[in-house]
Amino acid sequence: MVKLAVIFFTMILVDNYVLAKFLGICPFLGVSKKLDSAVGMSLAVTFVMVLATAATWPIQTFLLTPANPDGSLKWDMGYLQTIVFILIIAILVQLLENFLKKFIPALYKSLGVYLPLITTNCTILGVTILNLDNGYDFIESIVCAAGAGIGFLVAMVLFSGVRRRVEQAVTPKCFEGLPITLVAAAVTSLSFMGFGGIIDAIFNVAA
Amino acid sequence: MSENSKMKILTNGILNENPVLRLVLGTCPTLAVTTMASNGIGMGLAATFVLLCSNIVISALRKIIPDQVRIPCYITVIAGFVSVVQMVVKAYVPDLDKALGVYLPLIVVNCIILGRAEMFASKNSIVDSALDGIGMGIGFTITLTIMGSIREIIGSGTWMAGLGKLIPSLGSEFAIQVIPKGVDTFSLMTSAPGGFFVFGILMAGATWLTTRPRKEAPAVEGGNA
Image 1 (cartoon, chains in turn orange, yellow):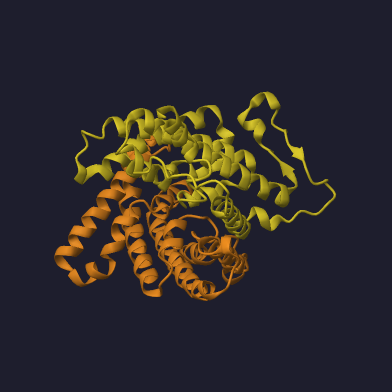
Image 2 (image 1 turned 90 degrees about the vertical axis):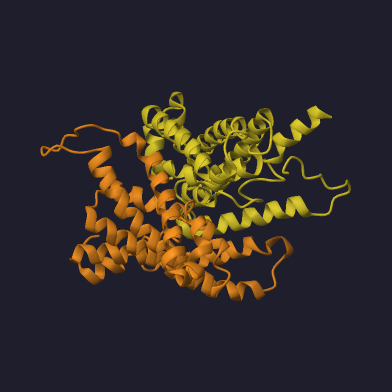
Protein backbone atom coordinates (compact mmCIF):
# COMPACT_ATOMS: atom_id res chain seq x y z
CA MET A 1 0.00 0.00 0.00
CA VAL A 2 2.77 2.40 0.96
CA LYS A 3 4.57 1.56 -2.27
CA LEU A 4 1.48 2.48 -4.30
CA ALA A 5 1.17 5.80 -2.47
CA VAL A 6 4.86 6.50 -3.05
CA ILE A 7 4.50 5.83 -6.77
CA PHE A 8 1.36 7.95 -7.01
CA PHE A 9 2.75 11.03 -5.29
CA THR A 10 6.17 10.72 -6.87
CA MET A 11 4.54 10.85 -10.28
CA ILE A 12 2.61 14.00 -9.35
CA LEU A 13 5.24 16.05 -7.54
CA VAL A 14 8.77 14.80 -8.12
CA ASP A 15 8.75 13.02 -11.46
CA ASN A 16 6.06 15.23 -12.97
CA TYR A 17 5.90 14.20 -16.61
CA VAL A 18 5.64 17.68 -18.01
CA LEU A 19 7.94 19.68 -15.79
CA ALA A 20 10.60 17.10 -14.94
CA LYS A 21 10.56 14.54 -17.75
CA PHE A 22 9.52 16.75 -20.68
CA LEU A 23 6.76 14.52 -21.95
CA GLY A 24 3.65 16.11 -23.41
CA ILE A 25 5.17 19.53 -23.96
CA CYS A 26 3.12 20.16 -27.12
CA PRO A 27 -0.30 20.09 -25.40
CA PHE A 28 1.28 21.79 -22.39
CA LEU A 29 2.20 24.78 -24.54
CA GLY A 30 -0.74 24.54 -26.91
CA VAL A 31 -3.75 24.04 -24.66
CA SER A 32 -2.72 25.76 -21.44
CA LYS A 33 -3.94 29.17 -22.57
CA LYS A 34 -7.38 28.76 -20.99
CA LEU A 35 -8.15 27.10 -17.69
CA ASP A 36 -11.20 25.11 -18.81
CA SER A 37 -9.54 23.67 -21.91
CA ALA A 38 -6.47 22.82 -19.81
CA VAL A 39 -8.66 20.86 -17.39
CA GLY A 40 -10.58 19.13 -20.21
CA MET A 41 -7.41 18.08 -21.99
CA SER A 42 -5.80 16.78 -18.80
CA LEU A 43 -8.87 14.74 -17.84
CA ALA A 44 -8.99 13.18 -21.29
CA VAL A 45 -5.26 12.41 -21.09
CA THR A 46 -5.58 10.84 -17.62
CA PHE A 47 -8.46 8.67 -18.79
CA VAL A 48 -6.68 7.42 -21.91
CA MET A 49 -3.45 6.93 -19.98
CA VAL A 50 -5.08 4.57 -17.47
CA LEU A 51 -6.95 2.72 -20.24
CA ALA A 52 -3.84 2.40 -22.39
CA THR A 53 -1.79 1.08 -19.48
CA ALA A 54 -4.53 -1.43 -18.66
CA ALA A 55 -4.44 -2.61 -22.28
CA THR A 56 -0.70 -2.58 -23.00
CA TRP A 57 0.58 -4.14 -19.77
CA PRO A 58 -1.12 -7.55 -20.33
CA ILE A 59 -0.18 -7.49 -24.02
CA GLN A 60 3.48 -6.96 -23.27
CA THR A 61 3.54 -9.46 -20.40
CA PHE A 62 1.51 -12.28 -21.92
CA LEU A 63 1.80 -11.81 -25.68
CA LEU A 64 5.09 -10.12 -26.58
CA THR A 65 7.42 -11.38 -23.84
CA PRO A 66 5.71 -14.20 -21.92
CA ALA A 67 7.88 -15.67 -19.18
CA ASN A 68 8.21 -19.25 -18.00
CA PRO A 69 7.82 -19.89 -14.25
CA ASP A 70 11.62 -20.01 -13.95
CA GLY A 71 11.94 -16.48 -15.34
CA SER A 72 13.23 -17.25 -18.82
CA LEU A 73 11.22 -16.00 -21.79
CA LYS A 74 9.04 -18.38 -23.81
CA TRP A 75 9.60 -16.18 -26.80
CA ASP A 76 10.79 -12.61 -27.24
CA MET A 77 8.87 -10.29 -29.52
CA GLY A 78 9.77 -7.22 -27.50
CA TYR A 79 11.02 -5.51 -30.64
CA LEU A 80 7.40 -5.13 -31.76
CA GLN A 81 6.63 -3.03 -28.68
CA THR A 82 6.68 0.38 -30.36
CA ILE A 83 4.46 -0.56 -33.30
CA VAL A 84 2.00 -2.56 -31.22
CA PHE A 85 1.66 0.06 -28.50
CA ILE A 86 1.11 3.02 -30.79
CA LEU A 87 -1.52 1.10 -32.73
CA ILE A 88 -3.29 0.06 -29.53
CA ILE A 89 -3.33 3.66 -28.34
CA ALA A 90 -4.65 4.89 -31.71
CA ILE A 91 -7.40 2.26 -31.71
CA LEU A 92 -8.25 2.94 -28.09
CA VAL A 93 -8.62 6.66 -28.69
CA GLN A 94 -10.82 6.02 -31.72
CA LEU A 95 -13.02 3.54 -29.80
CA LEU A 96 -13.32 5.93 -26.90
CA GLU A 97 -14.37 8.72 -29.22
CA ASN A 98 -17.09 6.60 -30.83
CA PHE A 99 -18.25 5.28 -27.45
CA LEU A 100 -18.53 8.73 -25.89
CA LYS A 101 -20.27 10.14 -28.95
CA LYS A 102 -22.95 7.44 -28.78
CA PHE A 103 -23.50 6.92 -25.06
CA ILE A 104 -22.28 9.99 -23.15
CA PRO A 105 -22.76 12.91 -25.55
CA ALA A 106 -22.34 15.50 -22.79
CA LEU A 107 -18.85 14.26 -21.94
CA TYR A 108 -18.05 13.92 -25.64
CA LYS A 109 -18.88 17.57 -26.14
CA SER A 110 -16.49 18.69 -23.43
CA LEU A 111 -13.62 16.27 -24.16
CA GLY A 112 -14.24 15.42 -27.83
CA VAL A 113 -11.97 17.99 -29.44
CA TYR A 114 -8.97 16.83 -27.41
CA LEU A 115 -9.30 13.14 -28.16
CA PRO A 116 -7.69 13.03 -31.64
CA LEU A 117 -4.75 15.03 -30.29
CA ILE A 118 -4.08 12.44 -27.63
CA THR A 119 -2.83 9.74 -30.01
CA THR A 120 0.29 11.77 -30.70
CA ASN A 121 0.70 12.87 -27.11
CA CYS A 122 3.98 11.39 -25.98
CA THR A 123 2.88 11.10 -22.34
CA ILE A 124 0.62 8.16 -23.20
CA LEU A 125 3.20 6.08 -25.07
CA GLY A 126 5.80 7.27 -22.56
CA VAL A 127 3.91 6.11 -19.50
CA THR A 128 3.12 2.70 -20.97
CA ILE A 129 6.76 2.06 -21.91
CA LEU A 130 8.22 3.50 -18.71
CA ASN A 131 5.92 1.32 -16.58
CA LEU A 132 7.36 -1.76 -18.22
CA ASP A 133 10.94 -0.44 -18.07
CA ASN A 134 10.51 0.11 -14.32
CA GLY A 135 9.23 -3.44 -13.89
CA TYR A 136 5.97 -2.42 -12.20
CA ASP A 137 3.26 -5.06 -11.76
CA PHE A 138 -0.26 -4.47 -13.07
CA ILE A 139 -1.68 -2.55 -10.09
CA GLU A 140 1.45 -0.42 -9.75
CA SER A 141 1.31 0.42 -13.46
CA ILE A 142 -2.30 1.57 -13.20
CA VAL A 143 -1.52 3.69 -10.14
CA CYS A 144 1.53 5.14 -11.89
CA ALA A 145 -0.57 6.02 -14.95
CA ALA A 146 -3.22 7.68 -12.80
CA GLY A 147 -0.53 9.62 -10.94
CA ALA A 148 1.06 10.73 -14.18
CA GLY A 149 -2.34 11.93 -15.42
CA ILE A 150 -3.05 13.89 -12.24
CA GLY A 151 0.47 15.32 -12.40
CA PHE A 152 -0.25 16.48 -15.95
CA LEU A 153 -3.46 18.10 -14.68
CA VAL A 154 -1.64 19.89 -11.85
CA ALA A 155 1.05 21.20 -14.18
CA MET A 156 -1.50 22.36 -16.79
CA VAL A 157 -3.71 24.16 -14.26
CA LEU A 158 -0.80 25.84 -12.50
CA PHE A 159 0.77 26.89 -15.75
CA SER A 160 -2.44 28.29 -17.23
CA GLY A 161 -2.49 30.64 -14.24
CA VAL A 162 1.14 31.64 -14.76
CA ARG A 163 0.48 32.12 -18.44
CA ARG A 164 -2.34 34.61 -17.94
CA ARG A 165 0.09 36.89 -16.20
CA VAL A 166 2.83 36.37 -18.76
CA GLU A 167 0.53 37.21 -21.68
CA GLN A 168 -0.06 40.66 -20.28
CA ALA A 169 3.57 41.42 -19.58
CA VAL A 170 5.56 43.69 -21.86
CA THR A 171 8.48 41.79 -23.37
CA PRO A 172 11.12 42.46 -26.03
CA LYS A 173 9.64 41.89 -29.48
CA CYS A 174 11.48 38.68 -30.29
CA PHE A 175 10.44 37.19 -26.94
CA GLU A 176 6.73 37.68 -27.59
CA GLY A 177 4.55 34.60 -27.51
CA LEU A 178 6.23 31.24 -27.01
CA PRO A 179 9.79 32.23 -26.00
CA ILE A 180 8.67 34.14 -22.91
CA THR A 181 6.17 31.35 -22.15
CA LEU A 182 9.05 28.87 -22.13
CA VAL A 183 11.06 31.05 -19.78
CA ALA A 184 8.00 31.16 -17.51
CA ALA A 185 7.80 27.37 -17.76
CA ALA A 186 11.41 27.23 -16.59
CA VAL A 187 10.45 29.13 -13.45
CA THR A 188 7.42 26.87 -12.88
CA SER A 189 9.60 23.82 -13.30
CA LEU A 190 12.13 25.29 -10.89
CA SER A 191 9.42 25.52 -8.24
CA PHE A 192 8.61 21.84 -8.75
CA MET A 193 12.26 20.96 -8.14
CA GLY A 194 11.65 22.06 -4.58
CA PHE A 195 9.56 18.91 -4.10
CA GLY A 196 12.64 16.70 -4.53
CA GLY A 197 12.96 14.45 -1.48
CA ILE A 198 9.56 15.31 -0.09
CA ILE A 199 8.17 11.83 -0.79
CA ASP A 200 11.01 10.08 1.03
CA ALA A 201 10.45 12.37 3.99
CA ILE A 202 6.69 11.82 4.17
CA PHE A 203 6.64 8.05 3.73
CA ASN A 204 9.99 7.48 5.35
CA VAL A 205 11.30 5.27 2.54
CA ALA A 206 13.79 5.54 -0.24
CA ALA A 207 11.65 5.92 -3.36
CA MET B 1 14.96 27.56 -61.47
CA SER B 2 14.06 24.01 -60.60
CA GLU B 3 17.53 23.53 -59.10
CA ASN B 4 16.88 26.63 -57.06
CA SER B 5 13.60 25.43 -55.62
CA LYS B 6 15.12 22.04 -54.74
CA MET B 7 17.86 23.87 -52.87
CA LYS B 8 15.25 25.96 -51.12
CA ILE B 9 13.35 22.89 -49.93
CA LEU B 10 16.58 21.54 -48.51
CA THR B 11 17.63 24.72 -46.72
CA ASN B 12 14.15 25.65 -45.59
CA GLY B 13 14.34 23.40 -42.57
CA ILE B 14 17.57 24.88 -41.30
CA LEU B 15 16.44 28.36 -40.34
CA ASN B 16 13.30 29.72 -41.99
CA GLU B 17 11.16 26.73 -41.12
CA ASN B 18 13.38 25.22 -38.47
CA PRO B 19 11.13 22.48 -37.08
CA VAL B 20 11.96 23.13 -33.45
CA LEU B 21 12.46 26.87 -33.25
CA ARG B 22 10.01 28.14 -35.88
CA LEU B 23 7.35 25.44 -36.31
CA VAL B 24 7.57 24.41 -32.63
CA LEU B 25 7.32 20.70 -33.41
CA GLY B 26 9.07 17.93 -31.52
CA THR B 27 9.68 19.94 -28.38
CA CYS B 28 9.69 16.97 -26.01
CA PRO B 29 12.89 15.27 -27.21
CA THR B 30 14.46 18.70 -27.73
CA LEU B 31 14.14 19.49 -24.07
CA ALA B 32 14.72 16.03 -22.71
CA VAL B 33 17.86 14.72 -24.40
CA THR B 34 19.86 17.94 -24.74
CA THR B 35 21.70 17.70 -21.44
CA MET B 36 24.78 16.80 -23.52
CA ALA B 37 25.73 17.86 -27.03
CA SER B 38 26.51 14.29 -28.08
CA ASN B 39 23.01 13.13 -27.07
CA GLY B 40 21.62 15.89 -29.24
CA ILE B 41 23.63 14.64 -32.23
CA GLY B 42 22.52 11.04 -31.64
CA MET B 43 18.86 11.95 -31.28
CA GLY B 44 19.05 14.27 -34.28
CA LEU B 45 20.57 11.58 -36.51
CA ALA B 46 18.03 8.96 -35.40
CA ALA B 47 15.14 11.32 -36.07
CA THR B 48 16.64 12.38 -39.42
CA PHE B 49 16.81 8.77 -40.57
CA VAL B 50 13.19 8.12 -39.59
CA LEU B 51 12.09 11.40 -41.14
CA LEU B 52 13.85 10.70 -44.43
CA CYS B 53 12.56 7.13 -44.76
CA SER B 54 9.00 7.86 -43.69
CA ASN B 55 8.82 10.91 -45.96
CA ILE B 56 9.94 8.78 -48.94
CA VAL B 57 7.53 5.91 -48.23
CA ILE B 58 4.57 8.14 -47.45
CA SER B 59 5.19 10.25 -50.53
CA ALA B 60 5.39 7.08 -52.65
CA LEU B 61 2.11 5.83 -51.19
CA ARG B 62 0.31 9.17 -51.21
CA LYS B 63 -2.03 8.21 -54.07
CA ILE B 64 -2.84 4.80 -52.57
CA ILE B 65 -3.59 5.69 -48.96
CA PRO B 66 -7.27 6.67 -48.58
CA ASP B 67 -7.75 10.08 -47.05
CA GLN B 68 -9.91 8.92 -44.13
CA VAL B 69 -7.40 6.49 -42.67
CA ARG B 70 -4.22 8.38 -43.53
CA ILE B 71 -3.11 9.15 -39.96
CA PRO B 72 -3.11 5.48 -38.78
CA CYS B 73 -1.26 4.54 -42.00
CA TYR B 74 1.38 7.23 -41.44
CA ILE B 75 1.85 6.18 -37.83
CA THR B 76 2.34 2.56 -38.81
CA VAL B 77 4.98 3.48 -41.39
CA ILE B 78 6.76 5.73 -38.88
CA ALA B 79 6.58 3.13 -36.10
CA GLY B 80 8.15 0.58 -38.43
CA PHE B 81 11.18 2.78 -39.12
CA VAL B 82 11.49 3.74 -35.46
CA SER B 83 11.69 0.05 -34.58
CA VAL B 84 14.48 -0.33 -37.13
CA VAL B 85 16.39 2.57 -35.56
CA GLN B 86 15.81 1.19 -32.07
CA MET B 87 17.24 -2.19 -32.99
CA VAL B 88 20.26 -0.69 -34.82
CA VAL B 89 21.08 1.67 -31.95
CA LYS B 90 20.67 -1.10 -29.37
CA ALA B 91 23.01 -3.36 -31.32
CA TYR B 92 25.77 -0.92 -32.30
CA VAL B 93 25.68 2.01 -29.83
CA PRO B 94 24.18 0.58 -26.60
CA ASP B 95 25.46 3.57 -24.60
CA LEU B 96 23.43 5.94 -26.73
CA ASP B 97 20.42 3.68 -26.24
CA LYS B 98 20.86 4.07 -22.49
CA ALA B 99 21.31 7.83 -22.71
CA LEU B 100 18.23 8.40 -24.87
CA GLY B 101 16.12 5.84 -22.99
CA VAL B 102 12.41 6.10 -23.56
CA TYR B 103 12.84 9.05 -25.92
CA LEU B 104 14.08 6.75 -28.67
CA PRO B 105 10.76 4.85 -29.10
CA LEU B 106 9.03 8.17 -28.55
CA ILE B 107 10.28 9.34 -31.96
CA VAL B 108 7.07 7.66 -33.16
CA VAL B 109 4.98 10.41 -31.63
CA ASN B 110 7.48 13.15 -32.46
CA CYS B 111 5.27 15.73 -34.11
CA ILE B 112 8.02 16.70 -36.59
CA ILE B 113 7.72 13.40 -38.40
CA LEU B 114 3.94 13.14 -38.49
CA GLY B 115 3.78 16.87 -39.15
CA ARG B 116 6.05 16.70 -42.22
CA ALA B 117 4.20 13.61 -43.47
CA GLU B 118 0.92 15.47 -43.26
CA MET B 119 2.13 18.90 -44.39
CA PHE B 120 4.66 17.96 -47.03
CA ALA B 121 5.15 14.32 -48.02
CA SER B 122 1.45 13.67 -48.62
CA LYS B 123 1.36 16.44 -51.25
CA ASN B 124 4.77 16.37 -52.95
CA SER B 125 6.92 14.15 -55.14
CA ILE B 126 9.30 11.56 -53.72
CA VAL B 127 12.47 13.55 -54.45
CA ASP B 128 11.10 16.75 -52.91
CA SER B 129 9.91 14.83 -49.86
CA ALA B 130 13.29 13.20 -49.39
CA LEU B 131 14.99 16.63 -49.60
CA ASP B 132 12.48 18.02 -47.14
CA GLY B 133 13.19 15.13 -44.79
CA ILE B 134 16.93 15.73 -44.96
CA GLY B 135 16.57 19.51 -44.54
CA MET B 136 14.23 19.21 -41.58
CA GLY B 137 16.45 16.54 -40.06
CA ILE B 138 19.54 18.74 -40.39
CA GLY B 139 17.67 21.66 -38.85
CA PHE B 140 16.57 19.43 -35.98
CA THR B 141 20.07 18.02 -35.43
CA ILE B 142 21.73 21.45 -35.51
CA THR B 143 19.22 22.87 -33.05
CA LEU B 144 19.62 19.93 -30.67
CA THR B 145 23.40 20.17 -30.88
CA ILE B 146 23.46 23.90 -30.19
CA MET B 147 21.08 23.50 -27.27
CA GLY B 148 23.01 20.53 -25.94
CA SER B 149 26.28 22.46 -26.22
CA ILE B 150 24.96 25.46 -24.29
CA ARG B 151 23.50 23.29 -21.53
CA GLU B 152 26.53 21.04 -21.31
CA ILE B 153 29.13 23.83 -21.24
CA ILE B 154 27.32 25.87 -18.62
CA GLY B 155 25.97 22.91 -16.69
CA SER B 156 28.90 20.51 -16.54
CA GLY B 157 31.82 22.49 -17.95
CA THR B 158 32.63 20.00 -20.69
CA TRP B 159 31.78 19.83 -24.36
CA MET B 160 30.98 16.78 -26.45
CA ALA B 161 31.51 14.38 -23.55
CA GLY B 162 30.20 11.02 -24.64
CA LEU B 163 31.03 11.59 -28.29
CA GLY B 164 33.34 8.61 -27.88
CA LYS B 165 30.24 6.45 -27.64
CA LEU B 166 29.17 7.53 -31.12
CA ILE B 167 32.66 7.38 -32.64
CA PRO B 168 34.58 4.56 -30.89
CA SER B 169 37.97 5.64 -32.30
CA LEU B 170 37.90 8.72 -30.04
CA GLY B 171 37.91 6.56 -26.92
CA SER B 172 35.12 6.46 -24.35
CA GLU B 173 36.67 9.09 -22.09
CA PHE B 174 36.68 11.77 -24.79
CA ALA B 175 35.56 15.21 -23.61
CA ILE B 176 36.64 18.80 -24.18
CA GLN B 177 37.03 20.68 -20.91
CA VAL B 178 35.71 24.19 -21.56
CA ILE B 179 35.41 25.50 -18.03
CA PRO B 180 38.42 24.52 -15.87
CA LYS B 181 37.75 21.66 -13.47
CA GLY B 182 38.14 23.71 -10.31
CA VAL B 183 35.36 26.16 -11.19
CA ASP B 184 31.89 25.35 -9.87
CA THR B 185 29.42 24.72 -12.68
CA PHE B 186 25.82 25.85 -12.84
CA SER B 187 24.29 22.39 -12.68
CA LEU B 188 20.73 23.73 -12.88
CA MET B 189 21.32 24.05 -16.64
CA THR B 190 21.38 20.30 -17.13
CA SER B 191 18.13 19.77 -15.21
CA ALA B 192 14.59 20.57 -16.28
CA PRO B 193 14.36 24.36 -15.70
CA GLY B 194 17.57 24.97 -17.65
CA GLY B 195 16.08 23.11 -20.60
CA PHE B 196 13.00 25.32 -20.75
CA PHE B 197 15.11 28.43 -20.27
CA VAL B 198 17.68 27.73 -23.00
CA PHE B 199 14.89 26.67 -25.36
CA GLY B 200 13.07 29.96 -24.76
CA ILE B 201 16.20 32.01 -25.37
CA LEU B 202 17.09 30.09 -28.54
CA MET B 203 13.57 30.47 -29.89
CA ALA B 204 13.71 34.20 -29.29
CA GLY B 205 17.05 34.25 -31.11
CA ALA B 206 15.62 32.43 -34.12
CA THR B 207 12.63 34.77 -34.21
CA TRP B 208 14.98 37.72 -34.15
CA LEU B 209 17.14 36.26 -36.93
CA THR B 210 14.24 35.53 -39.25
CA THR B 211 12.07 38.57 -38.64
CA ARG B 212 14.58 41.38 -38.19
CA PRO B 213 14.32 44.03 -40.90
CA ARG B 214 16.56 43.26 -43.89
CA LYS B 215 17.49 45.15 -47.01
CA GLU B 216 16.55 42.46 -49.51
CA ALA B 217 12.99 41.24 -49.90
CA PRO B 218 12.02 38.51 -47.44
CA ALA B 219 12.35 34.97 -48.77
CA VAL B 220 9.15 33.54 -50.19
CA GLU B 221 7.85 30.58 -48.23
CA GLY B 222 8.70 27.72 -50.55
CA GLY B 223 7.27 24.25 -50.81
CA ASN B 224 4.95 24.30 -47.86
CA ALA B 225 1.71 24.14 -49.84
